[in-house]
Length: 238
Image (cartoon, rainbow, N blue to C red; front, side, top):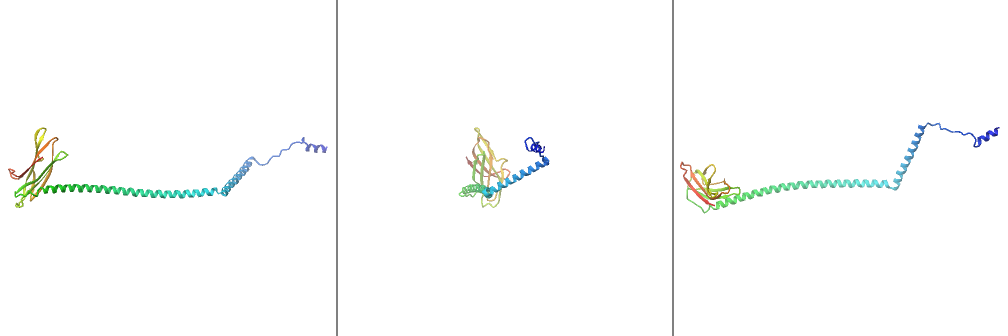
């Protein structure tokens, strides 16, 4: 009987037996996660250790340091170039302003030189014209300007023998042709008052109508008497 029982247990026909774990499944997942994390840490350590052994990480650090140095150098060069450009711009603006001032000064000097040349020519024409007359008109000039105006100038001279100051009037009369007909005009507002001690220079502009042809300019100096007697006169033909 005992032999049969022992043979049943030792043979294939023996009844099966199941062994169950006493750990709950949440704890099993925690243990599995810990094992996987530990394995990942070991793998990462092995990778980093391999990089250190191969010198790869050190090369990247050196390259990064070199790139940083090069970037700092380029920034410094850029700042220097920008500073030079700013200084150059300021210098150019200053030079332009100086050139403009010089050009204005040159134009002013040219205008003054032209005025002095005109005055010199004007007075040179008076040198041979010595007179003993009490009052005389010298150097009458008249010219039609591109603006359509007549520019005139004249010098009224009083003899040095006359110590008294002359007070009177000066009138300018212009005659010519307009539209095939005779045309004439004079100073706007009439004759102008003048006073002459030794000499007096006078000039002015008179507006002209379009298409007029100026032929003659006459200047008269009159006294302040009731009859406005003419004391001096001069005529210029254009």
